[in-house]
Amino acid sequence: MLNVKDNETLTRVGKGTPMGELMRRYWHPIGAAAELDERPTKQVRLMGEDLVLYRDKSGTLGLIDRLCAHRRVDLSYGIPEEHGLRCMYHGWVYDETGQCVEQPFEETVHPDGRFKEKVKLAGYPVQEMAGLVFAYLGPQPTPLLPRWEQLNWDNGVRDIAISELPCNWLQCQENSVDPVHVEWLHAYMGAYRSTDRNALAQRGSGLAHQKIGFDEFEYGIIKRRLLAGKDFDDDEWKEGHPVLFPNILLVGNAARATFQFRVPVDDENTLHVSIYCHRAAPGTVAPRQDVVPYRYVPLKDENDRYILDWTFNQDYMAWITQGPIAERDKEVLGQSDVGIIMFRKQLKRNMMIIQDGGDPMNVFRGDANELLHSPVENVKFGLRAATRYVPPEAGESKAVADIEKVLATWAGHQDTSE
Image (cartoon, rainbow, N blue to C red):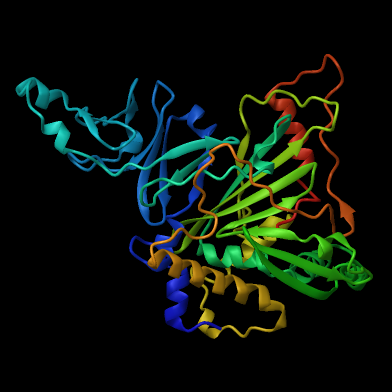
């Protein structure tokens, strides 16, 4: 267990906190690019900072303080101009750096005045990749946005799912180094909730864990499991799959991959962003995807009960019901928790690197075009991942709606968060 002070250190993400300073060294997805096609401004809260993301008429993305410096109104209701975002209250305009570049009445009264040069909001770098918008809130110089190989597959299609979780980011990420919960939260509880509860033993036995293992590698931690009836040549032990430091889980193979980002909104809320990447089979061509579709995933049904029909939602329930910030000083850890202990040590070690003036793990500089490869298992829970995308018959529509239909079919039973 952690004492209260250590738990505070690992969970608080505001400016100036140890974890807040660590997490500000990384790029975080803050939404789907397609959201800005529907409305060019979006409220964003990231690590306790209230911001507005916008796309102006020239296509430039900006992420700046949400409140206008003039009379403190909400700029998410502002008007994108050719260059910058105009406050709807008195017409002041801010560019993507947060610099005020126009003050209509002030410039009428003082045509040669330089008042606007003295007005600047916080502004943060943003980039688009794979249909997601990423933001960086840390110190300069800005590091590279990591180009994970699977996230940058060509000749494929993608799908984005977003959930807003009322809990701290750490209890979401610690789930990724907790293999044994799959056997109980997903298999056993899944059987219990079915109509055939006599099948509990049979349905759960295939996921009985005999051994778990964890290895640190250059990008984070490789998680391994040995299930009943398997040997050490099984993919889930021999290859395992990566937990990418500090807040990403990658599951997949050569055909499909799922990235899960656990983005700290503030101390007690997390934006959970999943992106499914599907690659076309060799010799085939995936449909053109001008827009990556996205959806927001509900947590509860009309009766205010957690939706537990899907693997992800079962995880969400478990994370959220630990409380806004899990009380780790009261936990009782066992042998199944060695990965969690390793991860917490990794976090503390990288906090100290920052304090010594260095770059923590997975902060990249140098070659902006380098693809980052991370090993993943090919066979999971005894099953190969879903087959690669097969294009529709000749002459069939290749519109986004068709892509979404394919993805909706794929995004179900074989996707797990584990």
